[in-house]
Image (cartoon, rainbow, N blue to C red; front, top):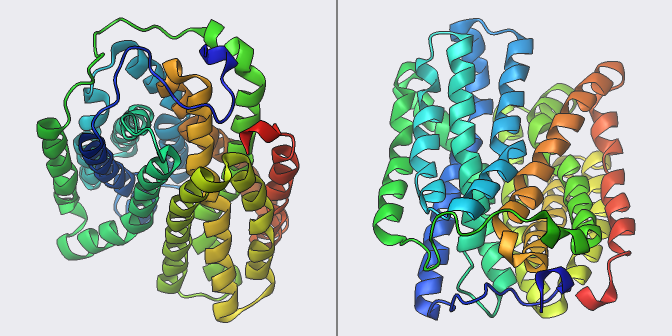
Length: 402
């Protein structure tokens, strides 16, 4: 079936390339998942550095916001650019070098002498993070024919788990080694890159320049592709806003201590990791459409419980809300890849970093401005409307994708 005629649940294919043996494909999935874990550990580090930047470099809140904006832009919004390059050149270096490069640049932030060097280092580290995701998401499950959604769920959840544990890791490193010795935190990323270089071969069809990005392939499928993109965008508004503002909200407006607020963020992110893993399994059994529909509407009561309850019950609502909402994470990516398998790197970037990054670039500033006039409680609670909108949009997906 030509790519332009693929349904949302049609099996992926790649022309003449034969699928890898199951053992080899499983090993590749595991290796890329370890890489994803490592890369996303570093993607979560900036928030831990921010209070120290203010102390050691005297950064203003505006400069801190610019650093966060650069992280989102270079690490997420620019992912389609890296997806295009990986589709064009096929070199494994786009993904296997990323753990080391992101680790070095992000870990070395403590050595920056001023804001401008700091901004460049954030851009470099975030670019390495961005280069990993499009190619990694394609090659991680490329040799798996059965249970592709499960494989993608494992890959996505590995990154989410890294993102959840990243703040704890950098807190320990900085507390024990000191701000000026932060570069030691790069060691795990370097070791992962060495392992990937020795164990991940180039893809069998890896001949440079053989494939160019082709808009014509996407023209017949732009409607379902746009639908999937909007579903990711709406989910990401909640995901990234909670990730950005949760510690501040809990400490300022709900009397949490900073360690407890950090723990709440870790539990929320860990719940999302488990949700992504579970969603992939459910999609293979019940279909991607059903998972997206029930995930969007199912997250709403748990998120409202977080805002209206107190104590352990509120924390349970937060964790379960993240678990149910992020169950769609791998499902959207697999469905989009199946629509245009020949452009899978670029498509994956659109569904991952670009959608997440655009949601952050639009709604993080809006949330901050609105919170100055109302409160973070009011603003974050109002964002629960976005999963409802996602549910209404998901109902428009064709039943053939169930």
